[in-house]
Length: 60
Image 1: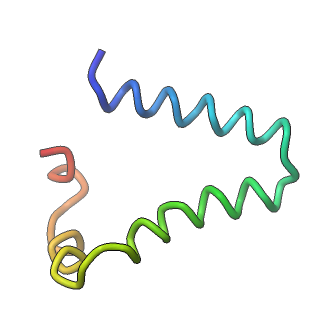
Image 2: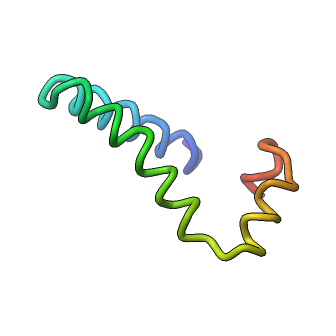
Image 3: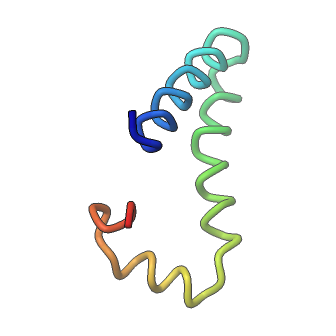
Protein backbone atom coordinates (compact mmCIF):
# COMPACT_ATOMS: atom_id res chain seq x y z
CA UNK A 1 0.00 0.00 0.00
CA UNK A 2 1.39 3.40 -0.96
CA UNK A 3 2.01 6.19 1.51
CA UNK A 4 -0.72 8.32 -0.10
CA UNK A 5 -3.25 5.53 0.39
CA UNK A 6 -2.27 5.18 4.05
CA UNK A 7 -2.66 8.93 4.56
CA UNK A 8 -6.06 8.92 2.83
CA UNK A 9 -7.33 6.02 4.96
CA UNK A 10 -6.08 7.72 8.12
CA UNK A 11 -7.77 10.97 7.09
CA UNK A 12 -11.09 9.25 6.49
CA UNK A 13 -10.87 7.41 9.81
CA UNK A 14 -10.02 10.64 11.65
CA UNK A 15 -12.85 12.45 9.88
CA UNK A 16 -15.38 9.80 10.90
CA UNK A 17 -14.13 9.89 14.49
CA UNK A 18 -14.41 13.67 14.61
CA UNK A 19 -17.85 13.57 12.99
CA UNK A 20 -19.14 11.31 15.76
CA UNK A 21 -17.58 13.05 18.76
CA UNK A 22 -17.57 16.74 17.82
CA UNK A 23 -20.33 19.12 16.74
CA UNK A 24 -20.68 19.83 13.03
CA UNK A 25 -19.21 23.35 13.18
CA UNK A 26 -16.03 22.05 14.87
CA UNK A 27 -15.52 19.38 12.20
CA UNK A 28 -15.97 21.97 9.42
CA UNK A 29 -13.55 24.32 11.17
CA UNK A 30 -10.90 21.58 11.37
CA UNK A 31 -11.43 20.36 7.79
CA UNK A 32 -11.15 23.89 6.39
CA UNK A 33 -8.76 25.39 8.93
CA UNK A 34 -5.91 22.87 8.88
CA UNK A 35 -5.19 23.06 5.11
CA UNK A 36 -5.61 26.84 5.21
CA UNK A 37 -3.15 27.17 8.08
CA UNK A 38 -0.68 24.89 6.29
CA UNK A 39 -0.93 27.02 3.13
CA UNK A 40 -0.40 30.23 5.07
CA UNK A 41 2.79 28.87 6.66
CA UNK A 42 4.45 28.57 3.24
CA UNK A 43 6.88 31.20 1.95
CA UNK A 44 5.63 33.37 -0.90
CA UNK A 45 7.90 31.54 -3.35
CA UNK A 46 6.51 28.18 -2.20
CA UNK A 47 2.96 29.46 -2.63
CA UNK A 48 3.74 30.59 -6.21
CA UNK A 49 5.25 27.19 -6.99
CA UNK A 50 2.24 25.40 -5.48
CA UNK A 51 -0.19 27.47 -7.55
CA UNK A 52 1.87 26.90 -10.70
CA UNK A 53 1.98 23.10 -10.60
CA UNK A 54 -1.02 20.89 -11.20
CA UNK A 55 -2.59 18.57 -8.64
CA UNK A 56 -1.21 15.52 -10.46
CA UNK A 57 2.34 16.77 -9.97
CA UNK A 58 2.01 17.36 -6.22
CA UNK A 59 3.01 13.78 -5.36
CA UNK A 60 6.45 14.03 -6.98
